[in-house]
Length: 300
Ligand code: GLU
Image 1 (cartoon, rainbow, N blue to C red):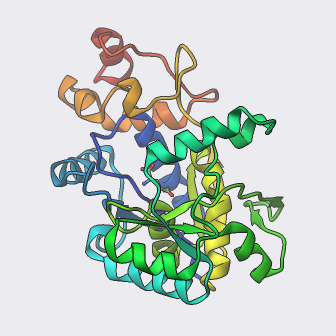
Image 2 (cartoon, rainbow, N blue to C red; image 1 turned 180 degrees about the vertical axis):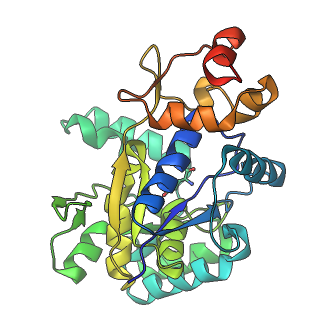
């Protein structure tokens, strides 16, 4: 089988240095293994994604020197594929409609908090709609918005096997999916988990390279792959780039954007070598240390 990986950003903002690090790792891996690198724009969430960001991402990646093969896949143009997966899971009776609002879930969790449950159960969906009678389900589905949740216990019982994911060395890791995750969101119909699994299979991705922050999602992805009869990719969860205070570079922490580095005149090639060359990946520049950034990553 051809070796193939992908970089799959969500256009909810501009790419930052942490995203660049991830993209460059995907590219370096692909070069080293003579593999293909595909680019996918994960834009199913129309409440947060914007086409201007998608365009800016392509521009920033081209500046960075990322070279991907074939056309870019936009998830928003393939909703039918995700709908088919929902229909299939419904047919297997492993998903159920959930009518809960966030408030209801929070109230139930707060109520459970006063009972002697373990700490980590307290943030999990407490299964309010899991055992609803079919009549009630059908009646409410006509009248109320609903999400689709995966009945994890039922799904696991149907599969009858233990769940694992495999890393590059071939080592298997046990997986626990602890709660009935939403795989079809009330507002957009699908969830990241469902779309990513369907697309990775459709695009023939053999190796999924992404940050450790997404390692927790690998459990639900493996479960969905098994239910949908999709091939098992290898997973590589790379370390995360942090700032000098040890915080993960993320949009919400206002991480330095590639766009700002580009407008400062930073040399993209030097930035790439700098990021990939870091043994302990920590981004040492504050947003306003323009001179320092230019000195190290500039034309000097
Ligand atoms: N779209 C996801 C993100 O930007 C990444 C998905 C993945 O690599 O599986 O965080």
